Length: 449
Image 1: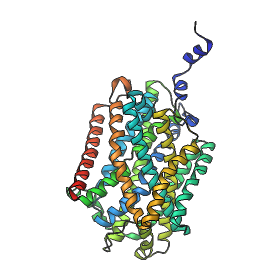
Image 2: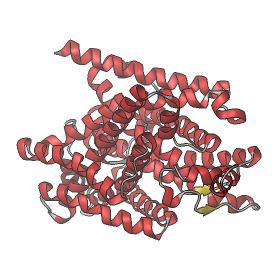
Image 3: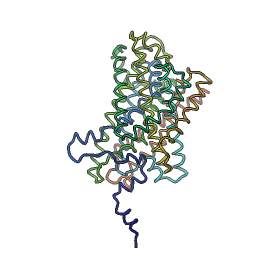
Image 4: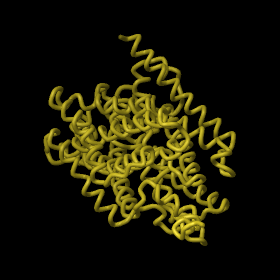
């Protein structure tokens, strides 16, 4: 005869059973979704896409876009478009996986693979988060230096204190985190809109930049930056993040309700990623219109960009706007990296650490190499470190993308919400492009050495 405890467990709704294992359990299904009203439902699902979009415009992305724009003008705008299309498709698959199975990508990997596969996947995911955090640490420290004159060494250490900001926001509720992120995105947009207005780019050249060219693959320097842009745009930790945070919405569990939730979540992420693309394109266009145009093709450091913008744009406020936008990007990215780290660790290992402890561990792993590089080589090497971190992210992508495609194309796992064949084919093509570019870059590096 079953005990009352066992009977109660079996009688619980499926989502309550999932909650016991859910990553970010403190916010799991805490946001109510109305049953009627299109716009009420739309705004109920508004938010997760913008947290994901933050990862597509972090300080590492700035470094790659500034470097690409200053060196090659508007040529790499096509790579930004391609990266954004990849991101839209892959994030939609993440949402599909989460809604159909009630599991995030990390949990799905733990469920599907034996430990000798899932543990390496976890290590690769952690490396990706560390690379992401490294870019955020350096970017935030540079922002503090530009605006307040704080030395980079101290700025890097100060970034560890953002854990208290995140804990405060989490305690107030998940909607507060979303509001914080969206508010900073608005500030970033205003800053870049003003700078682009004064930069006066050649719009005909901008349009030509969206046209693909084989020179991107043939030129090793362009390929390196292009791969960095892809790594900075389609970020591995975002795939884990999105599949976790969409489950903050208390949508229904029937097929029609899930299908409707997928529609609204996909709309949310697509709009947010188009917004991120506008920011990324603006950074590249700004670099091309100010630095490449004047023959300064070696502008890769964020500090140097800050110094030159005022004289080149003819407005004294330009450097301040740049520093404010950079600091906002760094702060935003810390929020999403924290949640990504929590989702990855809890999902793969089912180990639940306090949020502050998880954040400090991740931060320290990023702070140590950043401090060492600054002390040994000086601030001028931070640009290379930023770009290198994004290339590392690109190398980690296949280890997140391949399992994602496997799961979402599985009828057994996804049931009625299995990805349509055309979507799976596009996703496979995206994975093939990324892996091929990685192999190409590795071969170029070996050849040069």
